[in-house]
Amino acid sequence: MSVLTSPPKSPVGTPVANSLTAGKLPRYTAVYVLIGCIAVMSLVFAMIAVAAGSDFNIVASVFLGVVAYVVVIWVLSRAVEGPRKASDRLVTALVATAFTIALLPLISVAYTTIVNGLPRFDIQFFSESMRNVVGPGGGALHAIVGTLLVTGMATLISVPVGLLTAIYLVEYGRGRLKHAITFFVDVMTGIPSIVAGLFAFALFALITDDPGIRFGFGGSVALSVLMIPVVVRSSEEMLKLVPNELREAAYALGVPKWLTILKVVLPTSIAGIITGIMISIARVIGETAPLLIIAGFTTSMNYNLFAERMMTLPVFVYTQYANQGADTQAYIDRAWAGALTLILIVALLNVIARIVAKVFSPKTGR
Image (cartoon, rainbow, N blue to C red; front, top):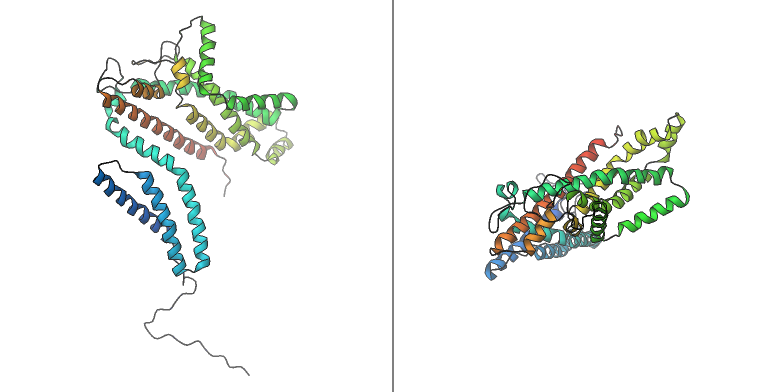
């Protein structure tokens, strides 16, 4: 007959080891190690920059910090958790390294633009134009207004055309016509931006019989040529994701097809459609070549899209950097400030898109 014996009791005051957490790193160790490695490398490169009198290299700091993180987290995990868990953490760290390498260009561009754009990121830059300014001072108000007007009009042109085209391709299109439209949309996706500018210029030069025409609406038409295929493709993919069961349920209730599209299909896919529209706006808002051709260059304010030349931020940045005056630094500072403003506008549009998509996305009730 077996005798049951109770486990030996630990002496009073002796900590009891938890088998569920023994041999395991704390929860946020990986995060702390990553931050610590990047901080150490940043400190090293900051000291090198101070000693050599050069600029701080943020790309090298982040990259070498992540590489150091891979080594440190593997060593720690192998010492505490064993070789099997260490291998798992090593692969995870390598994936994070690959992601960081993909982000390095974005980090470099954002850091360089912020550092160089802040000296002229002031009230004067957003409240004045470049009219009669040949040296320091001046601002980009005329370019900011021009960018918002030209891009806004391009959006008004592109969104209805692109969305209706996508609805036709998904809901109504059949046969050769559908394939032909899809083919031409694919072709338009690869059109160089300068070709779109030449198209708009040639179109309005023929219509108005003015070989030197320059105005903002022409720039909107050129940008819409670049926006429409992006809107069509993104909207088409979002509409395809709507389950057919939702359409069939509406048809079973006697709802006509057009009303099903309006009340069921579009509200279900609205979040993705808005995201695609914002991507298309971000695609064209930084275009320079088509606007330089058809919208032109000016140093004065212009609120009329249908008359006279209109300045935009990409053209402003290009002209400030390419046509520097006697005070070179003033022109360079304005160019960097214009680039920073353009990046912030794109970031703001993406934030607005996220908010709108969240508000208008269908509620599941969960």
